[in-house]
Length: 309
Image (cartoon, rainbow, N blue to C red; front, side):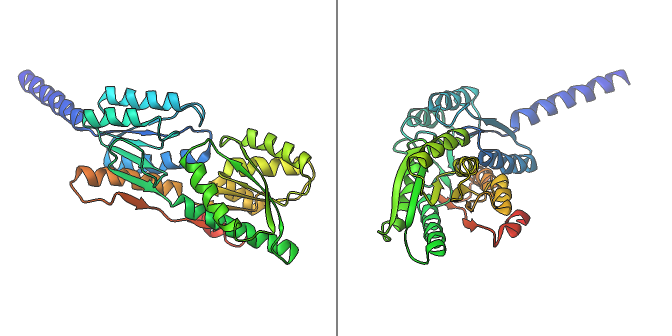
């Protein structure tokens, strides 16, 4: 009997060791977790990874401007020899060297929250929404709001930019494509707030002191738009504020009227689709280079439906 117990334990240890060795390990590296957007993408990825029985390492630097730390995290995961890396780059140029190292190590790279190709290195697939088209949707909403206020196409807009890079370039670029068609609507300022709510609040306070008749602030992220809204309220000013992300806290602000609108980009679904793309790749399924996720403007008319979704 004793020999049988020992044999069973030995088999369990061997089987358990094999299972551990076979367990897929994936790293998901975000720009930071200061925005609820990346908490949401992590949530979606975690849900999908748990369904698959995978090990998911969720990493992010302390700030969305700390690209050096993000590059180091990619390199650490290469040293760990994970099976795949999902990455949302802070700086697309800075991360190329690390991506090339992953290529050399045979670790597939997937990019999420972007459909803009990196300037170097091999990426299996990009998962995200069309950020320029999203910027255009926000621009059209801004024009609609100003027309509702004045009965004509006029007004003053300030833009809050994120860290320089393709996210800011695409979102602001799409927004400006619309505004350029309405010359009576003036973009009076465009300043960086580095994706941060507190910095956006400070920048907006300064802008409103310098240009008191600003009608609308477009933040290239929800956090910055929320910071702008907070600044305006503290100064007793009533302005329109539009953000991008559609984070749950932003939709709640829309429901309260403290944020005018946001572009919902379905971050939880984006996280799930990223892990699904990795699974399909491992399964030998043909996957598109660009996997597009949907977007929709959220305002007082539809916020309830968005929270249900």
